[in-house]
Length: 82
Image (cartoon, rainbow, N blue to C red):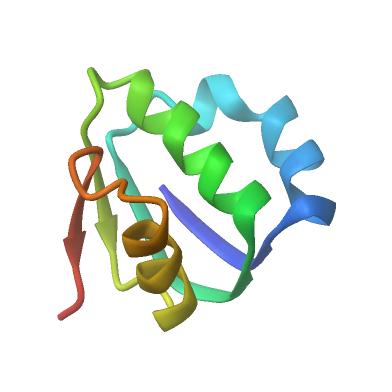
C-alpha cells in the first residue's frame, strides 16, 4: 500500500480509520512520504504486528530509517531502499 505526504501525528488519525484496508497489505510503500515522526513509526509498528511482526517497507525517507534504528525496530521491518 502506498502512503503519500506526511506520516506523522496529524495524519495518523485519518490513516487509523483506514487501517483495515492498509493493514491487509504486508508492504508499505513510503517512497512518496515526505515527513515522518514517532507517531508514524508507531503506526508502522502496529501495521507490522498485523503481519506477525514483519512489514516490508519500500523506499522510506531517511528520517524513517533513522527512527527505526533509534528505536531498535529492525526486527519488525524489512527495509528496501532501492
